[in-house]
Length: 103
Image 1: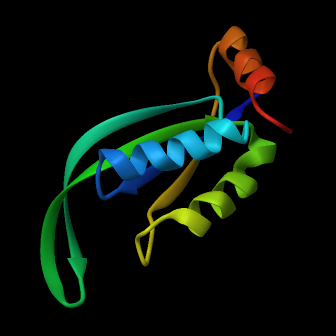
Image 2 (image 1 turned 90 degrees about the vertical axis):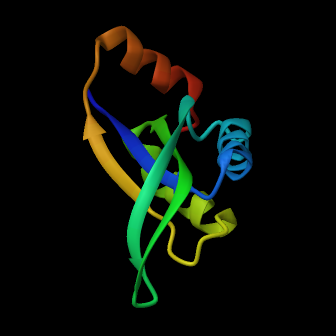
């Protein structure tokens, strides 16, 4: 068995929490971790840096595309970073993810 982790960047804690709460309320994710980071990147021909918040979202493989669509619909970035990883964990944790999400 396996599940999906999505790595998503946000401009701040408030926006990260807004998207997390939206996905939790729709039962599309089982949980989210919010982690402050410092990002450096190319944007419009310049090297930029900014504080951001990463969310690590856990969902079923079946919900991956629905979660991505929901994030893209409400994320304020022009080009949001939404990275998918298919992973495995201990069976009890994977069962919990399946129980807490809509499939």
